[in-house]
Length: 271
Length: 272
Image 1: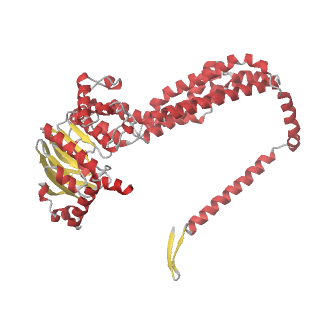
Image 2: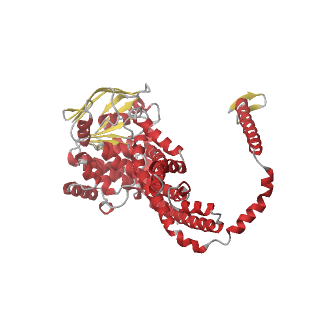
Image 3: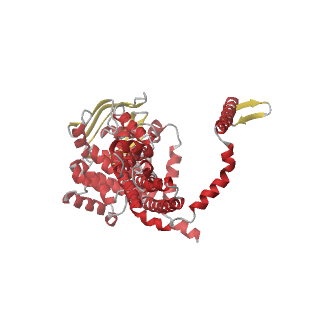
């Protein structure tokens, strides 16, 4: 904001000349980047295939319908596995995430200089690797199957849950903490009486939200051999059984809608 | 008995909050601590139970030197000092009963407090205190379901549940209406009389301070500029504490608003 006294009276500008210039430069680079990226994208595109796309889509679409309704009977087992991967993985992730969150929150960490960076590193590591990549690694380490999927989902969930939880811990009302401390309560009692009640709604909201995400993620973990619906999906894709693929999509869709409904209800109940 | 000697506090930002504060509070005396915002009232009472670390001087409560205590010994000393807060500072999502019982946390092992298994005596005391502050039936309500005045009563019950030797009260009426403010102040005064409990009440409202305390300490810029009987609060003294203001006019305005608030029947009649 700038203000100047001129002969016609005081003038007021929302932004100074320098701010204006910076904004223009920002927009310029954004446009330049877009043009550059468009250029990059087009270089490797084979336009013949693109021109052909509607026909291909129609062809696959044609083979996908009608869905193989009978195939659903072979999907109950993998679906159950998928739900188990998501649920157990979420539980593992949440159980590990709780202490990590308390160590990472600047108001509850025992040491800001040593412990907090370690906790933050755990969170970043877990978050920066996609659960599909975790599963890929784990299938190589502990072999294919449900366990790899569960551990992969768990490892990915630690960072997500711990990050949101430690942010919730840092945002608590300090006066309530002060009041409990003033009674002579010990550190553990302060956490129990002043911190936990304040973060409990956030905790349930985050956990259920992550469970909901994990259901979606665990449907594809089978692609790399970590069990569940993905395994079936890969089998159907590789045999070009498109109507089975559609059936799997339908099952995934219904599952995800159901899990979202559950998570919405739980979050409503705790807030 | 509480004794402060040359207490001073400098925040690490370099702000000098308190300078050489010395006074003694005998048993049963209710002290009103007044002064403009930023005078150091909150810092002063928080230094006593060490929610704020004093930078110099000494504080002793019945011959226990508080400023040097660490860890367990500090927690034991805090049990002896009850505190009532501005805007209540109740744990909003816990029940009234849990809030009151949290006054016993210093006496209860962690596992018992975690399972909410308090001693029968503690629970009986909590019930009788809730009865005393007029919230007998509300013990299972969540704290955030109560009104402001009710919450402050829970705050008082929590402080008394500690069976304290000293009561520290930080702006108890800051967000309450004039009538509720009076009720709360009267309640604090009554419990102090009954238990011969000394209290330091940090309060903005000069009229309330005058009416409900035995002694007034005036703080300005971290220094005691007045210490005496409430009757001694003349316009000159108020000017020394708060700066220039037409105090006669303030007193008049104050009593005017009070009578309005005390007779809401007029408003109702006007509405009809």
